[in-house]
Image 1 (cartoon, rainbow, N blue to C red):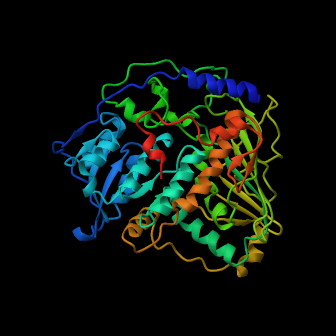
Image 2 (cartoon, helix red, strand yellow):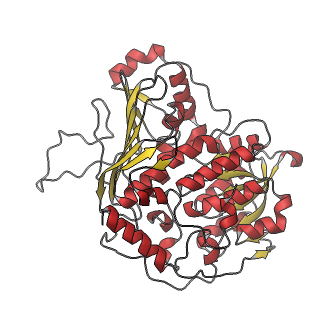
Image 3 (cartoon, rainbow, N blue to C red):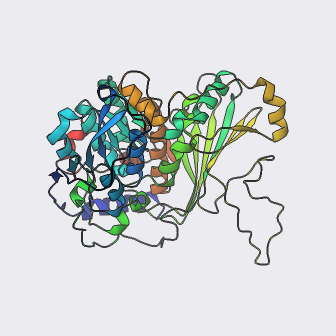
Length: 482
């Protein structure tokens, strides 16, 4: 399945087999009072200082975002929107905010109470980020949207164009570590010349994923199942081409499929590579090479991936090779002095002849011409390795300023004009586009050559078509115009 011709046939066949969309009426209602009280933040801003927030996606990660934004004391949560208001994972937020309007379709949310909304939080599957964000921006709403910014390269490009058009809006991608200690340390160390002349970065995320263990011989999507009574399947599909409902598409399972999510790379890349990408001015790669795809399948993500992204010189900065590792046993090479997190090569093998690798926490290893750095994910700070080198460098390290606000408060203060978003679309967009390019290389199992200026893939027409992907479903086309 890894040749370009076979991949092209799979792509065309899948497009041809798509069935008609399944309709479902949106819901709008005012809800009865719950016996559970609302959560109360430590300090609630005065009424005229609070931002009226509508929440699109209220379960799982969406629920986390709502709590974090509300706990700043800077918002009134004025509406809740989720395609499945009866799902168990939505009940917590419904109980905390029992007396506000509820919707199952974000289009109905904006139609009914749009003038009352100042900002929206968007915590829904990757494939649905784009239309919800575009509609919100077009209506003049500030947007906090989860990472990755959108599913396709072109959707991200359009969101960056929309940011320029609606330049008064605060727009923040939810890679929350971009407002924590790692952000300020990385910037300070680059400014002081501690991090310079970086030539290679290893990024690793070796935890088990939802699709690990699936049968990699699968040649079709899962069979149709009855749609739950509480789920608006049409709204869940959003602008994506029609699919029959199956439980393996929803409640986080969407991340497994190329049609809906960006896999481990899109999920964790923004938490591992964000600061390096920004402060080393990496932009877009000129080559993406899948060095290893273990358990390749054209429908869902590999059991393990090693992807090489090659970035050119940028001004006085040398070229950088970024190598991404995912898969439970697909561990990266560990440099001398790394510490105890890696697999010690001196451990004698057991009687089976195989060593069960130690779990390696998600993170990165940054190689410059003179120094090597070890870091984790999210807000984790870097350390210089080995320890002896770190001690010798201690007196040269600059003072790192503390964060003035976390990622959620930063967004809300930006809505009020008091700060600037730390992960706006013109910063988060190119980072997310790197991941979308990596996903195309995974999906087609082929090396890609990318023209950074023209933003096209030059060596593979199908891959270049996937920068845009299939057209949006009928009725969703308007969101693809800026």
